[in-house]
Structures are given as structure tokens and as C-alpha cells.
Length: 76
Image (tube, rainbow, N blue to C red):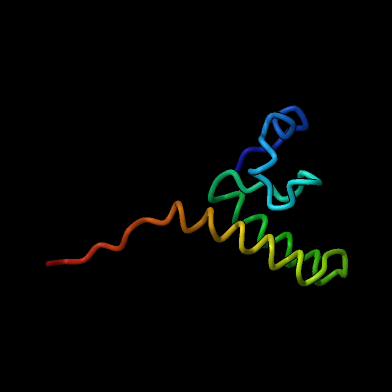
């Protein structure tokens, strides 16, 4: 995963963040979505994030992960 600089972060549209108002937890791709889920879990355990905030981040990250999912191969 590439290091996200402030300049790069500012160029990302708000809808590509799990917490758009604060521009926290970028989820623009699969790697960032997985990372957002992991960081949200850490912050919830530390008491810096509520369970509802974590659930919201997980939902948004899961949408990104599902969108980038590869279809299952079935032999026919």
C-alpha cells in the first residue's frame, strides 16, 4: 500500500472515506478498505471509537471489498 500524503488525501473525494466528515479511514480500494477495518477495530478497543462508528466503517469497507471481489469459478 502506498503512503498517503496530505496532498493526496486532500484530492480524494469525501465519499471515498468511511468517515467522510472527518476524512478518516480512506476506503478507495481493497487494500485501504481492509486497513480501515483493522484500524477501526484497534480504535474501538482503545475506546477512541464507538461501536456504532466501527459498524459504519465496517459496512462501508465491506461494500468496497464486495465490489472488488472476484467471482467464484464453477466448473460446468
